[in-house]
Image (cartoon, rainbow, N blue to C red; front, side, top):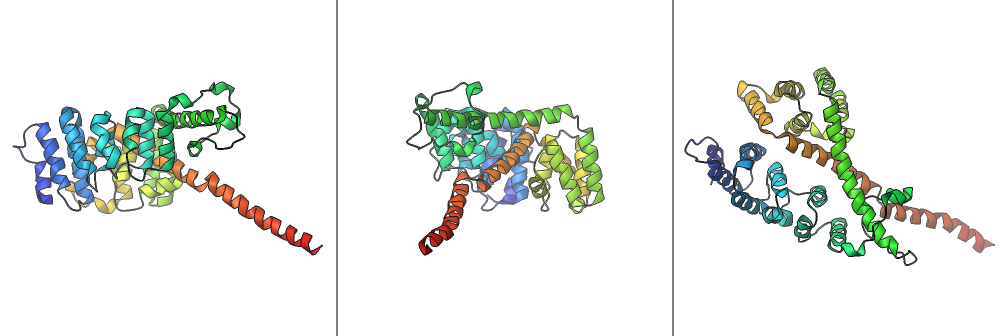
Length: 344
């Protein structure tokens, strides 16, 4: 089936019920050798509004089909991964559209059933594999009262998920370290969700909208990116990446997460990307896409950007790298002293 066949599915009056349209659209998309960004966006715009209307069998069929698809639409895949494991399993096991950050979030939200499916992925991140092993054997974990932990124990991050291997440690240390890692993971996800919800609820959007509108109209990208970082509570480099190319999809999701009306979102977008709206049809396409994007999906995108920023920070300050640098520096510092002692 060609790409033109796929595009025609959405406008066929004889396409039947949502069930048939949902399956047919995904089948046509999977037949494309290399779908364009526009076709990926079209599939999301078509299938996400139908998602709640289709049966479990159709969701299971689509999940299995997309699990083998190299260019699967990320928003639809994430929505399917939130389903029970008997539907989501093919995507959890095989899909390239599910990142490590997505996997950690899914384990935090759905627990052991999703974790067991994720454990079957090839080349699984060792940190995620360690976390799953802890979940598989909860009897090995001794839970301490969080209030009784010293500040150092409460500062454990995701990278500490592997139990300590120090032979001099007490028997409680490995279990406590693993439980601390799990608690930290849950706390990080929960805190991020609550902070984002509180920020959106506390400010109806007028202040953020005015700042984004005014900075966008200046034509200075850095001003707008700074305002966007403040509005979403993300770092500047992430905000800059959202407008780094001629594709407004990330910005659309960012504005939808702030719950702006479609006219406000469009005004900001057209100020940032004036060349993308040369005719009324382009404007209508944007408004339709914005209207069909579910706010929960947009909020998930923002959480994913935040999690990716945290992951980068963890990689850049990895304890293993720090230990290697410290060891190297110690060796270099010891060398001159050793030479001096030999001369004596």
